[in-house]
Figure 1 (cartoon, rainbow over the protein chains, first blue to last red):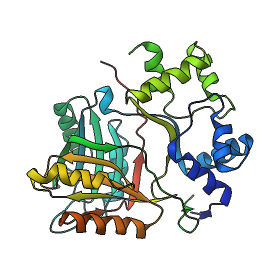
Figure 2: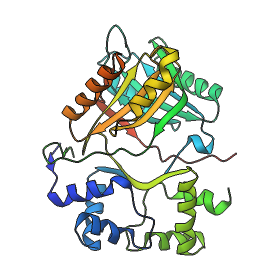
Figure 3: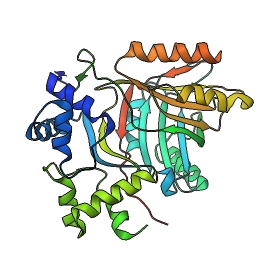
Length: 171
Length: 149
């Protein structure tokens, strides 16, 4: 893996992208005005960020709850450390798993180290999918829990200021 | 929701055309005008179906973030949730069914800023915040195929 430091041009565009694309005929030209660069440079820089995997996707971000995906289950698992990467990749291969992260345990409060998000219209379906996940990936014997979401207090895109010294990317 | 809106939502969650007039290109694919696409996106944004048209960054590559959790007494949940949501760095904040009943994501330019937010929330609420930064990402794709009722 090769570390790539972001240039000033990348950082200016990342910061200009915080509020999303303006809904106008030439959004990249408008982004360029915010980032003090040309429309062509915006497009080229976006291509680079996509190629390098720093931007995972560029497009319409929908609010799933609004579309009826109300059963949002966060399935959490206590997987032995030497197996967590393999299990995480197996989980990710399931079409109904939309996010899969390893996070630290915080004992005694929090014994789980693998998190995956299962979005569904129906709570029972989400439970069955988690059951299937455990069965198919051979982890029926580990401690797990499904935390369903209730109220959503806030949901919007992240806002931050990208800083040169932290803006390093693998790959 | 009509078929045009469904296609607009489903088919363009990724790969927004990188041409000077991306909405015109989408319009051509959907058999409508550029103005129809822009107007529909504005309406869907207004009613909350669309959050925005934007880039999703690889986690922790261009910013730092963490998932945080708190065990909040039921009668204080709304008040504490409001304090948490008030922070600029908090972008998601959900109640979940668990003893740890408030879950939120904090994003900032670096780890120090995140720790400031956590310290500040603990000071203002008198409650502990569990800090669970991502260590590995096995999957990041919320642009899944939508199923309509």
